[in-house]
Image (cartoon, rainbow over all chains, first blue to last red; front, top):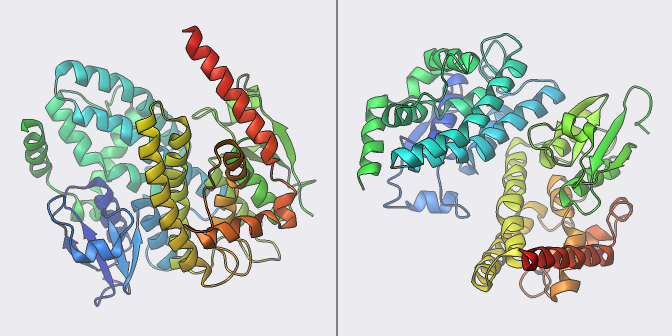
Length: 228
Length: 235
């Protein structure tokens, strides 16, 4: 595997976190080796985590040559910057296309995910129906975004997966798990053919297969939450 | 100076918006000319609605007919598209860029959020809690200033950088807030470095050219509060 390794790069994470998965997929796409250090959150915040992310005390944290980078989207930008000549770029070269990619990554983080997480936290059929109704308009927006960004190609990033693919793709396992439990299909192939096909292609990427956890494990974890 | 001919810039904004102000500051520090359109947010223009259909908010920068939305994204776009003769807004080192982006997100997600809640919270309890969080955020930002400036006058070092512009959007509101509530967001005891930065930043020509008058902002805030109180009483 190309650069980064030899103790230079560490990632603090939790195995099921979509934000951590985002970073792991990006590192795999760049072909970077690193030491992955699983954190036992929320039970125990390790010394290393507290030292590396004193402000938020959260994962993911990427530590490069002893210097921590926090917040998944900031980390993705950093990985693209610091290893610009290694592997495929996460962000396009053109400033306007970069702004567009950043816009959709922000939309996913600030609008889509918080809305969808209401569905995760729903425990009754009524809550689920309500939550699902609220998140669908955001999926419609993302379906349009996919059309605009991909311009007929396989990914938001074009021929190769990029920032937006990774930002949304990190959540796919959880989306499938929640779909299974609530009997919904968020990226329904009839309503959202672009996103449905994109999800299949994303799961098929080598970089994603390397890091994406078995849906069965995530399902067990989710059922555990609901049982509490 | 750029702005005419093939580089047409149009900014849709609103004079009280700290987010629109960030973009004005960036354009000002870059010496770029542009057409400014003041939006009435209670009666949004067709241009705004078609340029930002997702959020329908200001600021929107339209460059040669193509819209860019979200203040932080716009500022980065300006920096990348118009590198200019002077230092760029974002640092050139990838790690320092990551630090700048981290704190820019923090300013919006933590500092601004709790500061707004401290004056607009529904209960006294909520406001008090938000004020505590605001002071905690200020303490973190004071430490960030120390780390980023390395003893120099700005977050960007010798010259104004990305974080100076990001935080700069709030400067007039800081003065307005002091006039309204007698509370200085960055006071000399709790955050001496930031306190000095506010005056230093505000005295720069490029900032003075675009910063709105704090007195006008305070009057505006009082008017809005009275309107909201009247609406609440009527319901």
